[in-house]
Image (cartoon, rainbow, N blue to C red):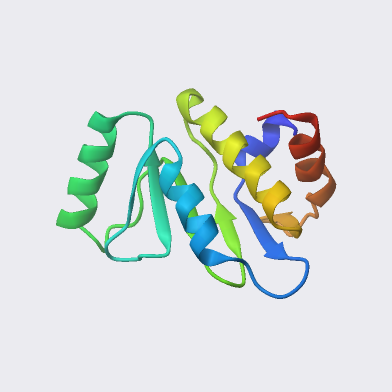
Length: 131
C-alpha cells in the first residue's frame, strides 16, 4: 500500500451485508495501546505508548467536546469502519496490521476521504503481508 495512504482517512464498507462489529472492536481494542472513547464509544483511540494513551484519555475526559487528538483513530459501525492516518511512525505498523486484518477478515470496499476507490491497494497490502 502506498505510503501516501498513511496520510489519508480510509473508509471501509462491507461488500455485502454488514460488518461483524464485535470482532472488529476486539481487533481495534488489541491494536497498540488504546482505549474506547467514552464520549463516542464507536471510536478507538490508539496511542504509541501507555504514557501517551493516559494523557490522551485524560484530555478526552476533561474536554470531550474539543475533538480528537492527532493519533490513530478507528471508528467501527455495522455500515463502515473508518481508519484515520497514524500520524506518527510508531503507529504505522499498527495501522498496517489492522487494515490487513480487516481486509482478510471482511470482504469490503475502501475509499479515501476524497472518494477515491483504494480497494485494490488495500487488498494487495493484505495479500502481500505488508503489515
